[in-house]
Length: 349
Image (cartoon, rainbow, N blue to C red; front, side, top):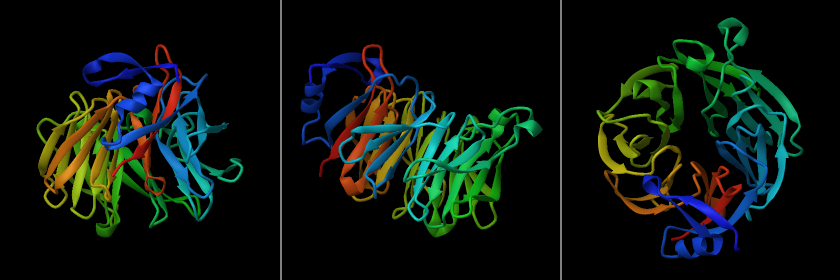
């Protein structure tokens, strides 16, 4: 407990706080309380998305620059092992019915399927063929639609030397591409799917737009924007109130869009360089994870949101909420004085 950790706050102010003081700072009256920190010595570079296998109590983290998927015990945060055989892992998804882990591998231009029992590779689905475009594709952001058994993965665009992007629809039962959605943009970020209305939403970051896709026709039917939207990266949505949440960068801003009109109903300042956002319908909270920390908002009404906390996270900008365990996870990279690590928070009422 005497080990020191570098914590980056808003406005890039860095201080050094012992682990035991981090626990004290995250007191029970705050929305979350830090339970544990698991160091990852020897792992450098950025991390990306997280996923969970509740049956085995496994938490998966994409260590994109370490070329592995790291496996933890979800309940405790204990590090268990590394999965190799990946190049640049990004979006992860666990499919309970198949007992498989899906990895969108940006360095391999593919989606990889692993057995969740022993982590051997089961299958590989090629996305865009680099021999045709002259440049390797780099699939990154994705979304697993558990209801439809589809994995949506953004690819093409700038990384594939193409003037447009695609969202591939992969059937997770057959491992086959069953559809492709063309998007006029070269940098796609977060994806959200509204099954109830057969709509998909995607951040088209290079155009400062949000694309609205009709999943019945696989066509972009509308685009939304707002005057100060910039580097829109993270996304989540509240289906009950039909509100779409989008976070931009430079500056860090959270927008709430009315999904019926495409208009912004509220805007709030948040941490900058966010790469992850979570909507918790039970607690009526939004968690925004960025390199400057974790911003937590409470939904006061469907058109009004208030910030309840800004917490340091050592630069961790991706997160996962596991309601079944009542825990929130943030993964952070190595700092100038500390190892990379996994932060595990208890969610308070």
